[in-house]
Length: 133
Image 1 (cartoon, rainbow, N blue to C red):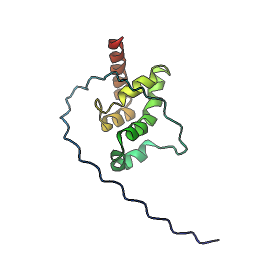
Image 2 (cartoon, one colour):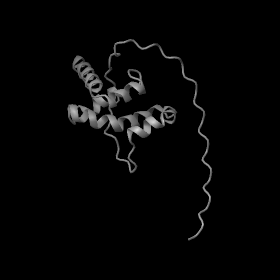
Image 3 (cartoon, one colour):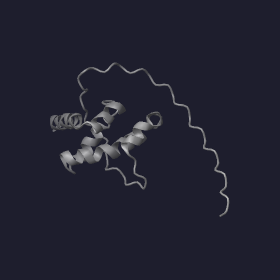
């Protein structure tokens, strides 16, 4: 066997910009907004990401750009939403649930893990859609 060449060191990650302090969350969930952006079903990736890996690497996840975070969370959220509301509404409702101005990453992760929380959030999104019709 031939000896393996040493791997090049990985480039350091860019430092995270300081974030503005967030207002305290009220006990009631914020009103879901009907957004112009529609979530698309997640693209099929070669490497399947699992929820435990995301949780174990939470600091790395938090350093991602917002669109990257939405994509990762959408990978877990979309199939669950589709099971509950069907293919027609799933993209829109998933997009609404992934609005970081309404729910934090932690709240979205909690909804992914807790069936009752997800059902409540889906119901809120459906009500917001009905109000706009």
